[in-house]
Length: 245
Image (cartoon, rainbow, N blue to C red; front, top):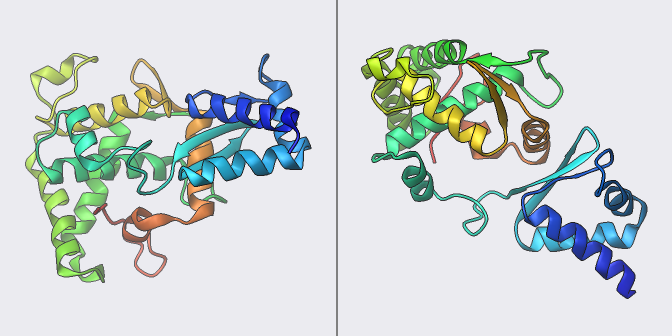
């Protein structure tokens, strides 16, 4: 292999692994973007290196993004990692966060071919979506085909949501998020997603980033995963279901 090809592939690999993006229209990376697609050897080497590390690469709006693959404990987050980062104690609190994340996703997508033209989501809108989905879980237990353990997981998340008050005095502070209310959990979740560069917050509005769109569309295309199987809106039942690890 030519040293020039190896050098170019490693430069692209290094930038992506640092969490940065490579864009056709961004000064400093446009040439790398062209090299990635124009040179088959560079493309193959970069994709092989990423695959070996269980890293997925996605493109959106002529920009390359990477994210840890499913089960990647080195470059991704474990459940314990997320509980520590979010300040959670119990698994069902973490599963509620997953559930809120999924409702945020469904606000903009139902699958890769059905992007809904919405610019942003408000916290109150997301709370309403979570409440509606949780209500379905409680009312429509007959739609579940999962094991009894999974079914209990669904109920646990729905019941936790219903146990929480809508808001507390602490929620009046726009910058604070807690585990003491529905609004607190939604804030906690969206603040985390903002920190991961998946949303951009402007006052009480959360705008999805190109990184969000790249990962979501790639997720639907590549495997749908366990979360989609458990949470996806079923054509037969029309029921939104909640996440279980």
